[in-house]
Length: 172
Image (cartoon, rainbow, N blue to C red; front, side, top):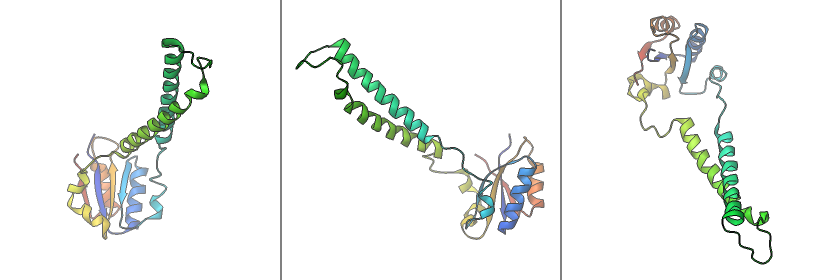
């Protein structure tokens, strides 16, 4: 697979036109970099479903169940001790530790899942090495597109037809 292409445009209209043209040809628009919000790009780059909440729920409930099982095993099976005439499986006493440990496990899993989903920690991105990327926060509009096949010449020609001032290949 070829490296993604970064195309530079002078106007937001040219950027939107190039993105729609690239998507119509079957290429995948990865990201757009603009100095101000462009409303027409919002639908094209809709965020995907975030897996952080289900991961946190599974980690929290799983850890709480494991802690409850550990307390039950140690109190009922491994070391049964009848103190004060209470039953060996006294579930109200067992609820505090599983709750606290479940919250801790969910928080840690959520932090790890968020970092993993965001691609962090990444101190340097290959886009920073491209000279025209600096102007994305000033007066240029950049579009990062992945070609649908190994040969990106058709994509390059399509972006240039759409009005790209410069098309550069991004190396990882």
